[in-house]
Amino acid sequence: MADLKQEKNEKLFDDSDLPSAQDLGSSTEVVGQVSDITGFEAQKAALGSAHFKRLGWKRLTVVLIVEAIALGSLSMPAAFATLGMVAGTILCVGLGFIAIYTSYIVGQVKLKFPEVQHYADAGRLIMGRFGYELVGAMFVLQLTFLVGSHCLTGTIAFLNITNNGTCSLVFGVVSAIILLLLAIPPSFAEVAILGYIDFVSIMAAIFITIIATGIQRTDAGVASDWSAWPEENVTFTKAFIAVTNIVFAYSFSICQFSFMDEMHTPKHFVKSIWALGLIEIVIYTLTGALIYVFVGTDVQSPSLLSAGSLVSKVAFGIALPVIFISGSINGTVVARYIHGRVYKNSVTRFINTTKGWVTWLALIGFITLIAWVIAEAIPFFSDLLAISSALFISGFTFYFPAIFWFMLIRQGKWYAKENLLKSVTNAVVFIIGIVVLVGGTYASIVDIIDQYNNGTVRGAFTCAPFQ
Image (cartoon, rainbow, N blue to C red; front, side):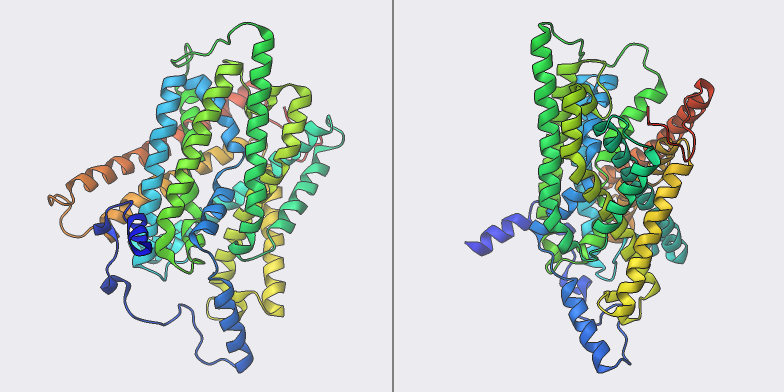
């Protein structure tokens, strides 16, 4: 019965797409293994290999939740307000299932090519050294910007909780230090422990916001002005920014190679992506729909600001763990990529020697510092993050996985009977990625120009509170 249950779990997708034993190969060689090492180094290498192979599918699910579900979920009601209930729900559910499928393709690539440790390695498989460097740069930039985004979010939370109690730069430094400390553990299995706190934090913040806005609507005695259709006279820029808010909420595949590299049984990843994908679809859709219905078209982003002054302070306080835990894991992932690349053929890469720890702490500190400086120095950072997401997440979530299927996974001609449906599906996914790439970049640039024209651009390194 156990074997039948396992077989059922592994057939959530078509088994014909899974790599064969011949594809996986029988080599036991470890990528980056050093042959001429001392007994001490050999012992450290063995311990390091064991330490970084502790993730099961349940822990992988928790780590993916930490990376994927953050306060971005509370931007959903504003997206629903722009797009309307019908389009918002369709996009939340539809894009969620597409993200599950593309994440499945990413997992297939990892199974077929076990040497792939990060997304950049997959870039090498399709475009050689150029692809490795290009995707690696995209990977580092996007994750560093995300660390900066969480640093700013932490600053905004502290300012809200304290009624702008001190200079925003002070709270920015405090946020950066917290992100730095939480990013120190190099193993994702260790991050999984914090993942339970992270998940409870975001769910509590969401429920408090939903309940508070629902009570406020009941007390008001009149229905809100929510609509099933898009708001009147909505511009392309505003509509597409709302669409990209939903798209980027499903961007968990960017770190999937990195996480799967620590799994002791990588083929079980399918359970993790189904669990995460369905959890995200339910949370995002219910959060967007319920808060939009309770608040109406005036809903703010993040929506917990619509819950009233006192309740929003409580919600922000409860959300602090998710702000910093979800933000720190991005720093850990990018540091693991850089550290592993620099010390690929050295025992230092296992971060269990004096040199390993010193270099690791220095790298984490440097990444966090750069993220804080970029976030504080660029007055239109939120739009810069939107541009980087349009440029990069469109690839990591959509058009790269589609290319992977055509170039690395597909067997036989694309127009063969057994491949035709998958070929059409991946072509559509590729087109979605290109549309997000072009439309998201255009909408973000237009928004930056509008901010300058309206004089609403925030100054760099200022003590002024965020508007």
